[in-house]
Image (tube, rainbow, N blue to C red; front, side, top):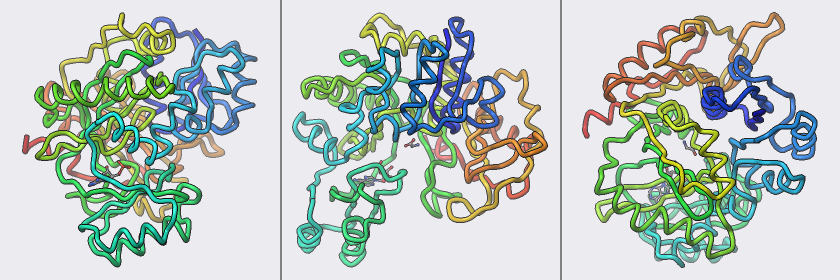
Length: 424
Ligand code: AMP
Ligand code: GLY
């Protein structure tokens, strides 16, 4: 089979690496890809939102399956564009990707189908939102309705902070059109867990759990980032939690989408909070997490291409999804200064140390080739160093050892990825 992957980050590198393991796959293309993906795929200079060019490329190369990694093209309807031309593509259609694309939609869905989540109100008018805050309890959570690069959520401790937040989102349009509507919701506390799943519209198969670390600095201090590291499985995801989610959340979500005429085929990412009253849905995503994919996919034993084809064909009930009985930790190597200001173009050395080591991987997030063909830093998050181990502490020790194999000027990482597992 010829595969095309759409995206350019560490997640897409992990997807490409898994596709490369499939016996069915002869050739992988990635648009636009990066310097790491280029080692296992042919990268094509087409951006993820250039649907017409991507469709034309898939036709020209007779691509058998296109896999969409990123949220923006999914929410924008890339799957519909491929299907309209008779092309096979993995990911939800536009009318299902709205599960991630609109927080108001997903909250209303959960309310209607009694899926456990935080209490909330939706607003389309800044004055009404401001008035509502006068009698609200603090802290409170403000969410821009649409996609905002993971930044559209504000946790406000006081009334004046929350009023500023409403103005930023709805009046100043800090997150653009994503702020035409907003959700104001109850603040919850508890441990967060990411659960990824495959869905064919009827059947859902849960992948091994994971947890990410979103803040830039150790001890969860500093600014929010795209994710500084992950571990899988999460020891906090107990069989009791799993039973609860199977009963009230996973199948309920797939069935709710089907009942709304929005059959979901692809990956649903459940962002869960384990509160003292039980698991609650914080958010849905319509794709693999980044950097969750970098710890979950390397542990997957079942051929990923078979699973994706079953999602498209509606035959997921025939798939037995199996994961290795081990653990993985991913430590992100970033450019110092991320997520605010940082330098790019620093030469990266030591990457060859990962060659041929089955339990280690270095997934490229922000890398490029310079004029001399050297691999250089090209983003805030540069690399994701993943290692497996029999247990989480072993995987963590292995991952941190492997971070030393790679060097570049400005290299920055957190030193406590997976440390929370000591508390489990
Ligand atoms: P979201 O994009 O909705 O997952 O929100 C991003 C992050 O904000 C989550 O991972 C949580 O850490 C936090 N968050 C979102 N909603 C809530 C809530 N209702 N209570 C507490 N924290 C929240
Ligand atoms: N790691 C969180 C996300 O991919 O949205």
